Amino acid sequence: MIYLVRHGQTEFNRISRLQGHVDSPLTPLGVDQAERVGALLKTLIGDPADWVIEASSLGRTAHTARIIAGVLGVGDVVLEDRLREVSMGSWDGLTVDEIAAIAPEAVAAAQRSSLFFHSPDGETYEAMAARMRSWLGEALDDGRPRIVVSHGVSGRVLRALYADLDWEAAVLMAAPQDAVFCLDEGRIERIDCAPAALAPAETER
Image 1 (cartoon, rainbow, N blue to C red):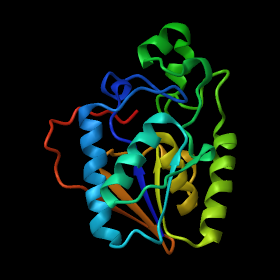
Image 2: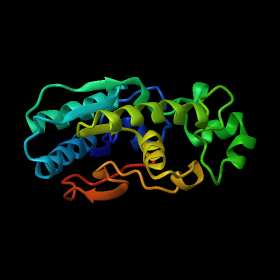
Image 3: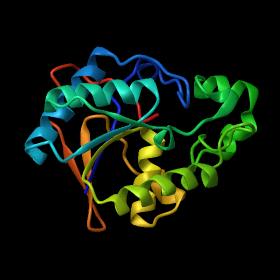
């Protein structure tokens, strides 16, 4: 069983910057989201002793995972490069408007399938799917239950691989920062957290 979550809202999320492999800190809302995800997971898993907590090695996911681990009362978080967000190369950290100013044709072409795999020096879907497929195969073969903290795009790709879907279907999936996706026995179930105490202002990017 895998409980998959997205990192909490970051400063770049708040102002609609595409992060990729660059980082920005969690906002107060992002910290609140991570704490609420931790509280939800505590009710779902009970004793966390046999669970692996694994996260993308980027800072925002590592921070979120450590908050969750703190709520669960465990100390160990495994950081995994293969769970990282897609790299958009020189577009990492830009807004859509900034990308449109330097590559208007790419923005126009990406209206249906998003910008994430249109950068001239970024990661391709095939490359990203390969690294995530490698991780998923190992995780499922290992058999230990996992809490996994990933990103907006990488979380979609992971769910798509698990459900045997392509990117065109994956891009339409929601990527909330205050919900848990349960991947178990070939099924995916979304479980939402309790409402936020703070006013939400998150982006899907």
